[in-house]
Length: 91
Image 1 (cartoon, rainbow, N blue to C red):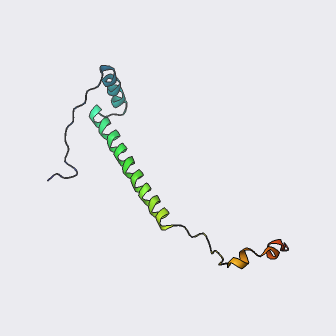
Image 2: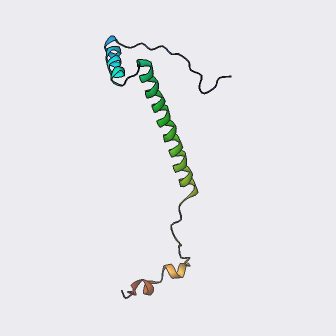
Image 3: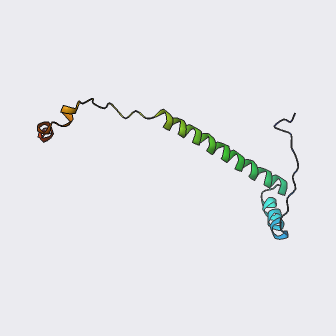
C-alpha cells in the first residue's frame, strides 16, 4: 500500500528550447527542473481541490436555499382588492 509521501518518477518529452528555459527558471528559483515541475503540479492539484470544495459548498447552500423573509399569506380576495391597491400609504 502506498503512502501519501511515497514518490514516483515520471518521464516528460519537452523541446530543447523549453528545457533550456526551464533550467534558467529553475536556477533563478534555486531549485531543479524536477523541483520546479513538482511545485507547479502540486499547486495546480491544490487549486483544483480548493475549487471543487468551493463548488460543493456553493451547491450545498443553493440546495438548502436562502431565507428571503416572511411572505404574507393572502387569500384570493385580498390579492384582487382594487380599493386596497389604490390606497396610498403616508410616508
